[in-house]
Image (cartoon, rainbow, N blue to C red):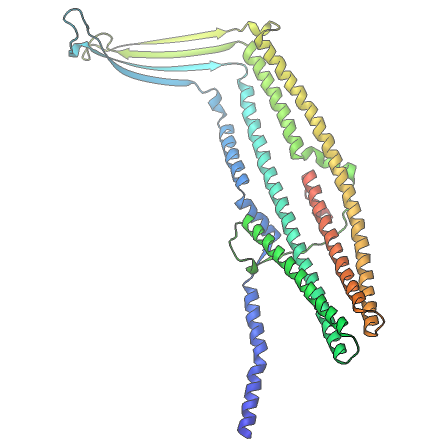
Length: 444
């Protein structure tokens, strides 16, 4: 008997360690999960973005041109060398191949053209670099905002899964209570089967939400360039709803001029004005052309003949006449350039008005969404209290299982509605940040 008792104690000792070992294994699995913060996701997305890489190449090309403005007035340089041969073909004995009939020549030249529109051409190149730099920074910001939206959408889906898990847990607990009540003859078999159906229905909703979340998470990881199983990845963050209040008119006045589309349109107007002035100066102002040409060779002598060379230079001034005559083709080009400027100015007014309306609408939408959040929070409190009272009434036999299930579903729906309202508010704030091209969340 002592041996048997000792064996029992050993068996129960090791059996009691199994949960501990299982928990340690589970914790080991959890430590292998890679957690991604919002900042890490934004950084990875920027590194993987093909459009941003293309913009970076365009920016590099524009920067190269802007740093070498001297190329606009750098002279053209040429050099050449050649060998020639001359002989009769039909007369005087026909074609002959003799060394004395060969000759050679070399030449080099420099040509420089200057016009009054040259400084404006250099300014246009610099402006193109500034515009490309603005496009690059705007692309980075738009990518970050889109990744942030996807990040918070996934957080909301994950939180919704937690709500469905809680719903399933409540259904299972109620199933256990109903099973015990049915075995004791306190409720009917129909009520007991309805609790089982509620459990399976809650499990089905949870499976659907989990499958959809895993699919969206895989798509998100692909954007980040991460090739890893979705069950080994987790997002580190939470949706925090804090009421934001902004002075709309002050916001428009202070941040509207920094909007990329408005800045880009103003740069376009400046470019068109520079192009017009360049055309005026290039077509109406005198232009100067200077060249130097050096030639050398044996002339008509043989290759062993005496070398001779010459150098020539020229300087000319061209004064255009037809651009000064109204109605000529050159004059019409200048008039069209002014028309393009006026059209660009009208586009700027239209963009500014649209931007103002967008900011006002987004701010109004945020105020409405915050009101929705407050209502949803009250609905959650009411639904929680209603479920508690309904559960107590069911235990006392005052209500049926269907009433309890409806109350539980109403509680889950209220929590989901609150989650949806908080997500919409967060996304609305991101849309406002995109509209004003500024980080507003830090000011909340």
